[in-house]
Image 1 (cartoon, rainbow, N blue to C red):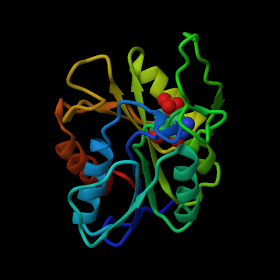
Image 2: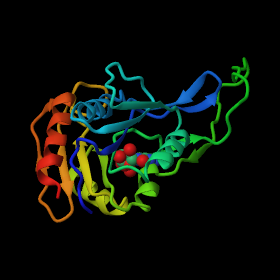
Image 3: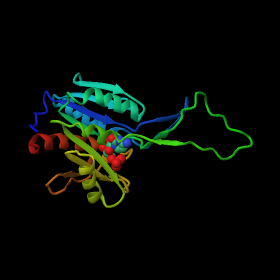
Image 4: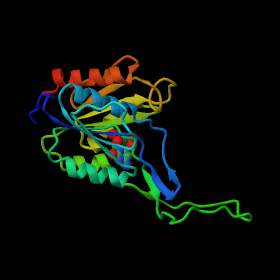
Amino acid sequence: FTKPVLAGANVIVTAGGTKEAIDPVRFIGNNSSGKMGIALANVAADMGAHVTLITTVHDQLSSPNLNEIKVSTALEMQKELQKHFESSNVLVMAAAVSDFRPAHKADQKIKKDDDQDLYTIELQKNPDILKEIAKDKNNQFVVGFAAETENLIPYAKKKLYSKNVDMILANDVSKANTGFNVDTNQITLIQRDKEPVTWPLMSKNDIAAKFWEYYEKNIK
Ligand code: C5P
């Protein structure tokens, strides 16, 4: 692995929560705002990287270095990732990928029935996109996220190896000002053969700037 400088590098960032259709108007989703991924994509583009942002939410700011690809489902996100991964240098997987999707999408809006109170949606497991793509990793520097409510560092460390990634950005989502749908976050960087590094509570934009600065200075 030889790390390229960020300016001119091909960077992929995924952002937002995937939406898994139940019928034409309803979906299974999660609370992710996409703010962390979008901040990471914007800062990298501002620093001169060629950024492919695969996202379920639309980005307000856009730089000429930013190519936004809009997706909804985990399977769509995986397909786009597969197209772009080989020619990339860095992947940051910030998206909150739904672990499940409805096994069958109804063609028409599911109607409620006056005589029926209980309804069932059968769920199919989605692929672990990060794990699947990181199996084919060559020289890419691959970063995953871990949102946990307890045992943050041991769980994140486990993910580093089970998903074959180079770094996990872990955060404790049990606190009010970290994680999903807020503008701030507290990150712990977990890497192989290195002590975890915990940064103070910061805005997601500041975390993005600090992350790419760390990448430039510390990743060899
Ligand atoms: O296993 P867990 O969901 O905690 O892992 C989080 C990391 O794995 C994130 O980087 C997320 O984008 C990725 N992930 C994925 N596909 C899934 C679930 C999570 O790529 N089905």
